[in-house]
Image (cartoon, one colour):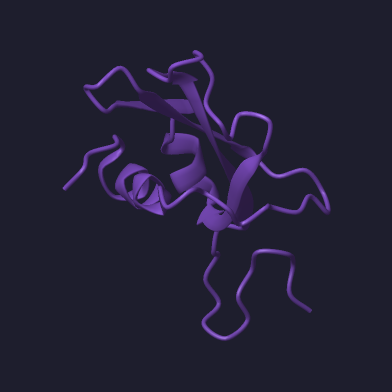
Length: 107
């Protein structure tokens, strides 16, 4: 009988995965009224990461668009049964950048 996280098929130990929530916000904006039109909504995406990958990430990353707008991506472990909205306003590339480079870059 295998212990949680233990693999029977090759006998090695594999780290348990963690369900991680990425949440988008716009803490600084250049809108005419000083508000982001989407600020009342929650924008979250869930990803499965290894425990080691999750531990290597910072809790928050920012990206300055250079025009007065700044995006922030907060990262935390998902609560049991927490559902993600799966909406990220087209900024999923920020998550990919964080996971690949540990920073948000627009390339």
